[in-house]
Length: 228
Image (cartoon, rainbow, N blue to C red; front, side, top):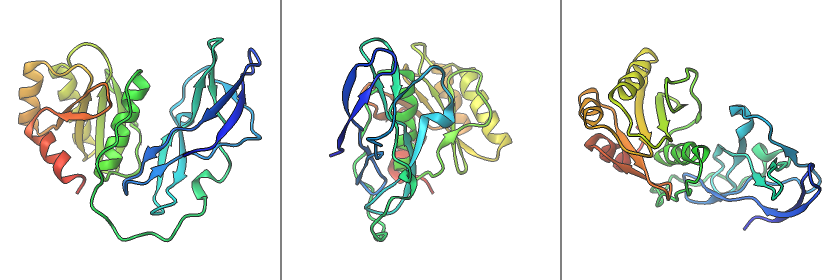
């Protein structure tokens, strides 16, 4: 369990007691971004992908991963970025253990579009993909994320994902010599599902618990076998 630190809002000066959430490493052990009790929280005034993530090494297996940077909402309406201790990416780890079977996926509850992207990124990491990051090319809709050899798109809107969205993802992945996968909060139009089967695109629906549910057989296979 992570330690709680005192966080002061720079706007209203309220004090908050905050504990960073834990995330599941591929090995199944919990990973918690180490907080800096002497640091100063800052207000989030704009979003930048590089500022959204922090590198943390799992103390159980030694793997280093990118996880959401801790944030806290103050009652005054200010969103606070909680400081992380320096050396978060190089904290001492135990000697790496032998590879173990994949543990059960631990979802992240979806309340915002950012949560949907985080849930998809955590799932891809659970499948075995590495170097999760923002995609170089911005998709026409939704949010693009990438890993080594993979391009993924997350549609956090309330409308079903369209045929055009699936085709655009597939075309972009083809130009980058990568495979692709789609995550949607609201499902897919019938022609989009049919086209995805033709193009070989795994489709997932993100339920509000943050668990990706396979929509087609390609997604079933990916969920069962993981990254190759």
